[in-house]
Length: 135
Image (cartoon, rainbow, N blue to C red; front, side, top):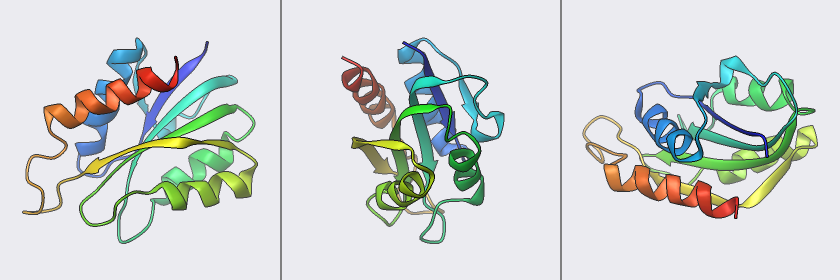
């Protein structure tokens, strides 16, 4: 099975989550700017909520790679919202991308809110989630 882990982060928090997932799956975590070079059966998209939305780089990744994404799995961090799933689902639908109903979300640090998030436990849980959906 072909697997990719892509992430977008402004602070490095979501990159840490992506690196934990990638290590558990035996692949490299790369920025969404790297895109996909080939059709990939499972794409784990680690992203964050900024100002109540996902970044334009995440939107561009989905649109630019829509023909290369088999199933997209959403993993998100956010300080205030509970998930980016609804936003990513809308983007997936607009681009004809299959988005799994299974998702992972944890708190992300924003200034003094949720200090040191994601934690080591959050990263382990994200890795376990990714391994679990591939079974």
